[in-house]
Amino acid sequence: MAGPAVPEAGRSAPDRRRRRPVHAGHKARELVGWQILTDALPTRFAQALAAAIKEAEPKARRVSLPGATIHDQAELDGWLGKVRAEIEKALTEGPVIL
Image (cartoon, rainbow, N blue to C red):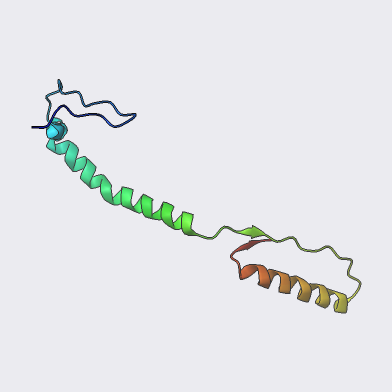
């Protein structure tokens, strides 16, 4: 025959004076209350899905554009080509903020 239960370190022994069954909580809620809870489930699932999608989305990184003094079309084309290459490289790692 087993002796009294010995609680694990850091845990107290269960209170055996409490005789209310564990499942008694469901009886306290009326049928209407359960209907309200079940009606809310699709909304809660949709909110959880939206939060998960948002969390899984890659975080955008800021890309600073280099400053330049541009005197003509050739300098503009050169600067735009350099900036385009920097942005394209950053886009391989996820969304960018300019």
